[in-house]
Length: 162
Image 1 (cartoon, rainbow, N blue to C red):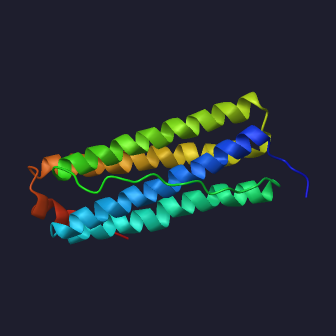
Image 2: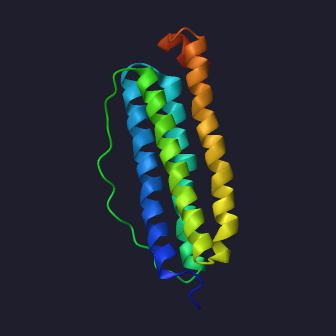
């Protein structure tokens, strides 16, 4: 199979696989934190988000690398936080993390453009749209939390999970 992905983009896509898997770990940790505090709906939401979004994103990069004749390498996932002061902090950390992932995708887009990695454009465009959705999702959760008067139990009963 011809290699249709450059060495540098291959390396950075492998790094992004780790970023996406780490996102899943972060959201699983947030799920466990919420579960311990009796916020079962939010816990289920975060667990589902990790499984159906973040791991799916990682596998999208894996498939692209394989289809483009590159080499998949799974790097180490650094330890994630497991305790937060309160729900507001959890939501703000999720937003901050999604902004970090968005910045990473933009770096990948710029690298693909610089290296004329045309095969990657469509996928990275999809990821940029996905990141807008992700950031908006967590921003909406924070707004809803604020609108409920920051009442954890009441807010938790309003959280819907797929």
